Image (tube, rainbow, N blue to C red):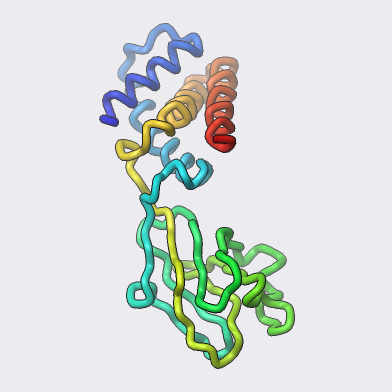
Length: 201
């Protein structure tokens, strides 16, 4: 959808929320500013199916894979990384779809070969510009079976199914900045309703 069409949808949301004066240079500025911010948030929370395969796929060659020699290893993050879709090493019994951070209590356990993730319950931790994985039996060749990541997508490339969620979130942000707390709360409620509908589809 063209950006101008998305902005028109935001204006419609603002009108539904009770804002009558939308012909304002300051308001126009906020629409343009907060649309991209809202888009980045949607990429992080919307169900992965709504992006219809618009993600980066790693192969063994372009992953920057490092084998630590002890059954653990790491791969580099793709450019414009947003979130993990699915990752699996050959030998693992399931895909990993969640990344832990180094602040998570599970992370220190990964230094212990008896407590860390393994082929039944592999663990992945994001650290800086790399993702560490745990683990494979020592001596096994590290081969990527699947590596899919959601990367940044401009809002103009969002599927139509996401536009209501996007425009209500942008409208709530604009109303917050304009100190229209009641209308902002209403718009945020509409955003959450649209998001929840996506999650049950």
